Image (tube, rainbow, N blue to C red; front, side):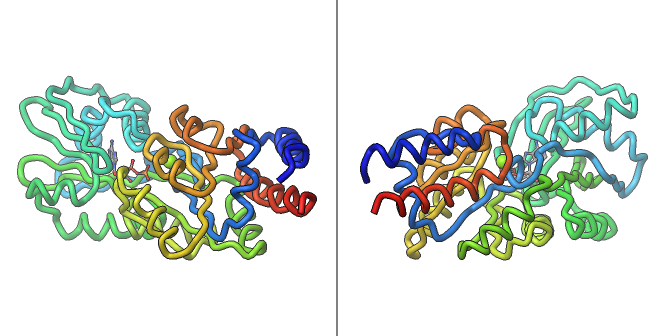
Length: 292
Ligand code: ADP
Ligand code: MG
């Protein structure tokens, strides 16, 4: 490619709020076959809210108070939803000790002498915290609605389930439709559970779902798609997306995301709007057509 033509491409990109890291980036993106979106904070707004709670025994405020106390130590969007809800309900949170973050799974801490776990079902399973049937049913309902079900347990069993809701970005569905129209395969990758992931993907019109992927495994999933012959554009915002953004043939970071994701990407969408994904790929196709 001639340097001049590439410069034209990147100039037009800047105009669209797309920051292209190097001149060769657009060239590398010409053969993209597959666009993989991270879920939380990329396809969705990432501002989670507590939508629903259920308890097996005891009062809901008591359960929420325990869960929120433990989550006070976490910076995960799920934690923010739970602590905000507790504050809004005027609950006084007890102090916690021995806070531990279990990446991709949840958190635990000691509250008033009791060890409390809050997180995915697997985390509580591993601790032999028994899940009562009526709570499992409520959790399944929440997940079918696209909520992330967060379990809170102590003293041998799960005491509550918290349904945390996130919403798709306004443009998500249109962007997915547009990418499909361009002949591209679209997938979603997330650490969230299969049911929730499928519900959110269905809302966005995405049929390929990679769920329950541990933070360290997103990069492995991208490599696997490449080994199967795909040329992958990865779109992400989080610290845990960074290695996958580097591995992808084209790494696209959301400008409102973390610095690590931006540093690991080839392209940054300044506004955080997903339309930039379509524009970037279209632009690379056009730029190359001018050159050759
Ligand atoms: P993603 O960023 O793709 O949603 P993460 O790897 O950060 O995924 O988390 C995966 C899942 O682990 C979350 O969907 C949630 O169920 C659970 N989880 C992670 N951190 C927390 C937390 N602080 N509290 C409760 N659950 C958590
Ligand atoms: Mg994310």
